[in-house]
Image 1 (cartoon, rainbow, N blue to C red):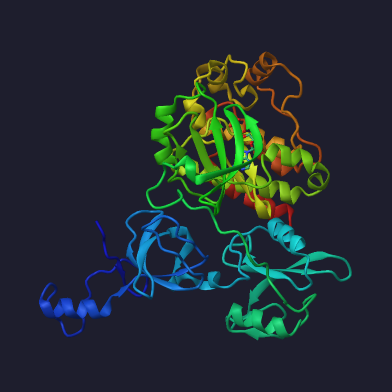
Image 2: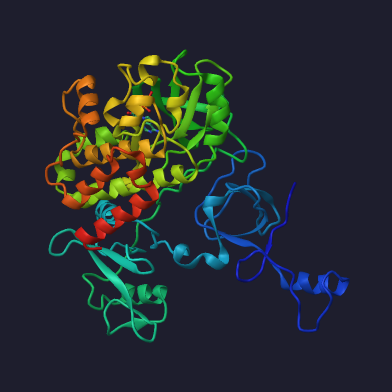
Length: 483
Ligand code: ADP
């Protein structure tokens, strides 16, 4: 059923409007007045989107669309200004009245200081800049790349004076941030360089499924390329769907998972969507082996990434902390949706472009048939990431994910060392039962290690939630690093 969605000018769901003339609600004249005063919800495209499936509609960046049906979370039906209608991914648009800075190429939203530095260094252009939310709520920071006297990124808080004007240097105040940026495009005005360009062609986010209500994927529409790796369940290959969307295809070894149950669950899992979760696009369930099709992450597993870049990463505690914060955000989303990961570890996180880190394989452990993996006595069971209540009673919860998250933080801050070194599983269990935990990684801030230790509280109730942990990590990063 299509529901026409109308909103009032504040963006809130419209309520009957009683004009001063006092028309009685419900009467034809009141209805007429209501109709003339309420406006349809209009959204602006933040990215281009190419409709591939029939029933979908292409989006052109910055163009406006009228929303016809937003009753489903991830795919909305809209009308373009030629009168064409169709479904579009809701994370590709923003309500016109709320768009604010998001319409500008240079605004990167809540990108961290560390990720903005990597992005600008990668662009390597004098005067390249972005504006991002600063870690202090409500404030913005300008990050600017200059090669003088050597390549580096400078960060400037955008401040406001008593007249609510914005400025970077007190001598040049403007009534809005876009005006201020425009001013500094023509005058360096005290900055290390004039603002010249901002990174373009930034990747668009993954959509929840490859189209509206689509989770079953036709294998003939997948072009399979090189092997990305292989794991517990089989081989993972890079691929393209309908020649245009990059995907990763996990070909499940037959007999390794309870397939029918998983296929049912996949319908729910395609609807889980967060910047820090690897998006499940769908499954090819009609043939054997079944394929699991997900978002493609160009730098592969976090564990390998940490080990490969140990030299540069170990001296950049800020970047390591930022990776942990990203993972924590993804996990906070799962926690909010009462979804337990059950196998959180660096090997199950992936790294994409612009240093984005995402959690993968959430919930998959429930469908594994191999006893060696599912029973805590099994050789493949992730003992080193398990809290006492899992070791003793196989009791999984968001709090057992928290314990695993602490171990994952430890993996990040050691750049991919094996927790408990070469200790055998039985020895690890003994230690954990006695309350002996992992040691502080070399060079790791005490404040960061204190957070890991909270994750390893013997009693699940005493461990923080991911939501709470996220705030603690952000506070620590503000305390030890300058924004
Ligand atoms: P399994 O779950 O079977 O153990 P993994 O999910 O660990 O398999 O995948 C094996 C390897 O394949 C990973 O270590 C990673 O290098 C690569 N890989 C898996 N998924 C992706 C993806 N979405 N994008 C890029 N590489 C991936």
